Length: 259
Image (cartoon, rainbow, N blue to C red):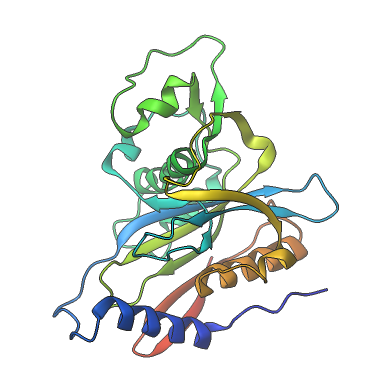
């Protein structure tokens, strides 16, 4: 059964409502804030009768999407570009990440995928990486310190590119977010005591797409789940597919396909 998900009109309405709450009745700041690169990772488990995706509930004290279920992810950092890797991106993934961007290049594409892996590790304790038979000497300081200290290098080969969305203008925070997918069997290690009442994510849940309908999700998250459902129905995450790109022009949210 096909799940019904919100359309871009619902996305626009939610964006306006969120902006109104953030502004608190004050006029929007002048000028255009450039969206910052961000990355999110959908971890997909297909070991059961229905595919499940990993989601985390954000802390209720957060100003941004409090108490909502989201995919792990966050802002890309400069250090992500320099992190050592076990293997690089698939050529078609790299090409799609470079397409339809200014200043697009392989280094930026790699940085985005690495940000998704790092943020997932920081928020869930899951390591998407490869343990080295002969450990490569690497620095273990900075934002990658704890990940590299597990003895693994991040592995980009199993990462696939699902969608892209840019936060509308006028918001207090704007992100140019790339949504990636990886199969759960790419998890090579887990550390504990990451998720809890005082953490960024207070709980984790593996949910089927149908089960997500009853959860408190941002509209863009529901739309991305709809894109995931389409991708799975069209042959799975390995099948070649254009990448949907959501952005706003005026009061209209647009969806175009990145080749």
